[in-house]
Structure formats: structure tokens, C-alpha cells
Length: 400
Ligand SMILES: Cc1cc2nc3c(=O)[nH]c(=O)nc-3n(C[C@H](O)[C@H](O)[C@H](O)COP(=O)(O)OP(=O)(O)OC[C@H]3O[C@@H](n4cnc5c(N)ncnc54)[C@H](O)[C@@H]3O)c2cc1C
Image (cartoon, rainbow, N blue to C red; front, side, top):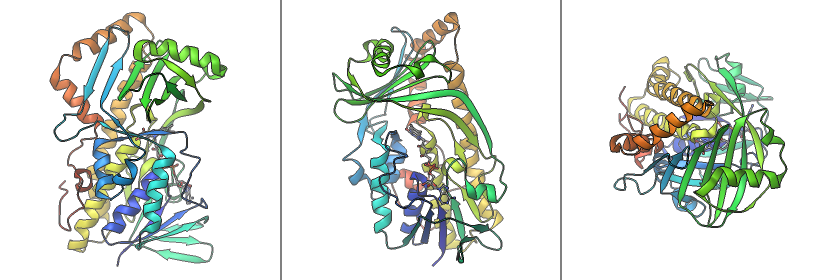
């Protein structure tokens, strides 16, 4: 049985472990944390799982457990002024919803349970890795013990130790912006998500359970709102939401910095960088983790293919094929997030009115709405088997 070594048990690490184990690989998963469950890292994060990623969870046998905590997103509205609105939804045929919102700790716990119960996965928790070699095959060292594998998947976050050990370039930059997440009880229940461009940034309103919502405010890091008292924040949030909804009560907010990081190549012979280790963008478009799930789908197809062809996983050809398929999507997403940041930075009132007009006009262009909805639902081509809701077949599915 071939062995996959995985470093990092965040969402991408756990999902990679499950998808490799279901293909019949032996998986060894390493994390510095003592436990995979109840990560405080994720407790405050509302995670949007787009429609394609949801299919991946269904193929991995986790969607029945996740649905208990997941809130379906029917419609998404992008607004600037009250009169400027662009709305889209799923096509209703292939996908009932654009995606689902789930709180990070519930996602983490549900996938962790599946990982811990899987007979092909062995977890090594609370370990400090001391060395990493990729040639001739990947080898990880923990103190005096060494672990050999056929492929190493580094899912150890933005400051990836594995990436640094191999001196793989990573371009990192700060957006000089911060986001504030405010758990909020709204007066009405809504199934719709909203993103409003404001004079100084954006406010997003995501429904979670019943009338619970997560408000996400973004602005320049030095904006005074990050120093406001809770009451003042609630008043500001209500002003910005306008007719989107009436706030009943805001809870204590959490603030974090927005930054991006990008490896020009995420695969090298013997190792693949996945999740924030290879590509990280701020969650303003709720896309980063979903792109990681796409990458996992591509990896699973290539792993399935190599089971039938016998191709070495640590070969240059394997790494090149993986890069060829995924890098184009990383670059596209970075470009599109760049457009979003330009809109976000629009300070000139005349340009803001122009943007509002653009939203209003595009709201009548069906094809454009379809294109945006498909992008939001994570439809990237070629669509890997897991993102079609199927286990990869053990023959070639992904073509260059
Ligand atoms: C508030 C918020 C909301 C978000 N919402 C969305 C969303 O809606 N949609 C979306 O697509 N994305 C979203 N994201 C982004 C998403 O959370 C991240 O992309 C994702 O969590 C990255 O996971 P990761 O496992 O790559 O990194 P991390 O979560 O940083 O996990 C890294 C793991 O590796 C382990 N580790 C680190 N170093 C080592 C080492 N040397 N040895 C062993 N283990 C190690 C760590 O303990 C950890 O378990 C959001 C992010 C935030 C902050």
C-alpha cells in the first residue's frame, strides 16, 4: 500500500487525508496540535462551502453529518447604494443552493471525527517535526523516528514549515486592511447573503442558524471603527446594513488582518503545498478554502490515475501535471480578488455612483449573472470527480 504523509490537520489537511484514505492509500497525518477537535482557531469563522465543495463532502461521506450545522444560501446580493443591487442564485437544476454557511469549529469537528475513525489514517498529534527530505522519496523526521512516504502533502498553513524547509518561494503581502466579524442576532430570518460596498470598505451579512448572522466589516487597518465600543459598533453596523435587516443584538467582535500569499508553483517532486501553505487570500470572496478543495479534487484524480498507471508520485511528471492543472486557477482567483479590492478601495463619490450604476445594469444581464453564480459555486474546469460528487475512478479522468 502506498503512503501519503500529510503535515497539518486544518480543513485542507483533514479533507486531503479522507480523500487519499478512501482511494486506499495509507495516510499518516502530523500536527503540532494535541487534538484535531474544537480548534479555537476556527471557532469564530463563518465558512462558506460553495456548491462544488459541498459535493466533495458528499462524496467523502460527510455531508449528512455537516447538514445538521450548515445553513443553505439561496441568494446573494451585492449592493452599493440602496438603488444599486446585483443579485444571483444557483441555477436550480444542478445545484439547489449557491452553497452553505457553517461555523468553522463545526466543520473542523465533523471532518476530524471522520478522519479519526478511518482505518487507513494514523494521526500523530502534538509532534514537532525536525527534518524533511524529499529525495529519493519523502521522509519526515520526528526526533529519532523517521516516516517514509510516496508523497508529502504540506497543509501546514501560511507560514508553512515544509515550504520553508524546501526553500520554495512564496510571495506574501499585507492588504493593510482588517476585518471584524460580529456574531449578530437579527430580528428576521433570512436565507440570503449580502455584500455591501460602503464609503470605507465593505459589510457582509451571512445567515448561519435561525436568525443568527455573521456580520463582517472590512476597512483600512487604521480606521477608527476598530477601536469602537460594542454599542457604537452595533449602531454603525445597523446604519451600513440599512434595509438589509434589523439587528436585535451584536456579540463581541473578533478582528483579524487581511493578507495574501501565493507560491508561483505549488508542487515540487515529492511534495504538494495545499491550503494556505500554497495559496492564501483574505476571505472577502469566501473562495480561498474552496479553491483548496478544488485542488484536493485534482490531487485525488491524479492519485487515482497513478494507482492504475503505477506512475511514481514523487516524480517530476506528477508534480508538473498537478501544477499545470491548478496554477491557472490560483492566478485567476488572485486577479479576480484584485478587481474586488479595487472596488473596495473606490473612494471617489462619482466612481462610487458609476459602480452602483454598473451593478444595476449588470443585474439585467442574465448571462453575466449566470457566470458570476457559477464562479461563486466553484465551477472550475476540468471538474475533478470529487467535485462532481463521485469517488475518482481508478483510471485517467483529469486531462491537461
Ligand atoms: C474569519 C475567516 C473566515 C474565512 N471564511 C472562509 C470562507 O468562507 N471560505 C473560504 O474558502 N475560506 C475562508 N477562510 C479561509 C480559510 O479559513 C483558510 O483558507 C483555511 O482555514 C486554511 O487552512 P490551512 O489548513 O491551510 O491552514 P491553517 O488553518 O493555518 O492550519 C494549518 C495546520 O497545520 C498545523 N501546523 C502548522 N505548522 C505545523 C508544523 N510545523 N508541524 C505540524 N503541523 C503544523 C497547524 O496546527 C494547523 O492545524 C476564512 C478565514 C478566516 C480567518
